Amino acid sequence: MDRRRYERFLKRPLDILLATSLLVMLAPLLLAVAIAVRVALGRPVLFRQLRAGRYGAPFAVLKFRSMAEGPGDDSLRLGRFGRFLRATALDELLQLGNVLRGEMSLVGPRPLPLAYLPHYDRRQRSRLAVRPGLAGSAQAAGRNALPWRDRLECDATYAQHVSASGDFRAALGTLRILLIGHGVTAPGHATMPRFDSAPVQVPEPIEEDLNTPG
Image 1 (cartoon, helix red, strand yellow):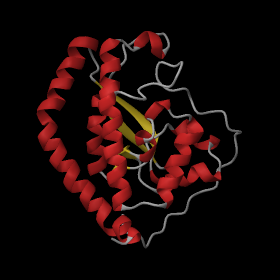
Image 2 (cartoon, helix red, strand yellow):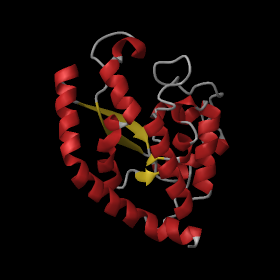
Image 3 (cartoon, helix red, strand yellow):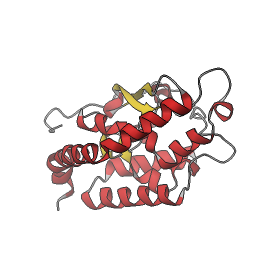
């Protein structure tokens, strides 16, 4: 299949079809996770945060809460239950709703905080040319165990070479990483360190091709 044809005409319909099917099939699991979060961590059950989407546009991702309320760093607030949610990515299943809304794709770079935008270099900013995803090449390559530079390079490479076969490999690779429990955290961290090592620079805007179907 022609790579550009897949990216422009087939990727989005497949996202809608598969995300809808997954939400229906996983509805009992989502309810069970919500109840478990309520019992283990109390209210609120859900966590909402602004992330950078395609072309850097902000959107709100919805997740099941995995940390206890209160002061302290991640290592103190993230207990055994929260680590389980993150290791299995159950906390991120609600982002299937973001896929249906067109803010995310099933496969693509992970959506990162808006605060990271000024720190990307030109190559790293190219990851914003595609919708962020639930699964992706960086997750398949090691998830959070992968250093920031390598993760962002995987994302940039993916954005330049979107294809059906690449999405299939990334989805299977991400599933494999989840099943073996690899890369849940970065070495020496409870989760993942902030990406703020690059020199701050004024980002150049990414222009959207208005003739390209969403």
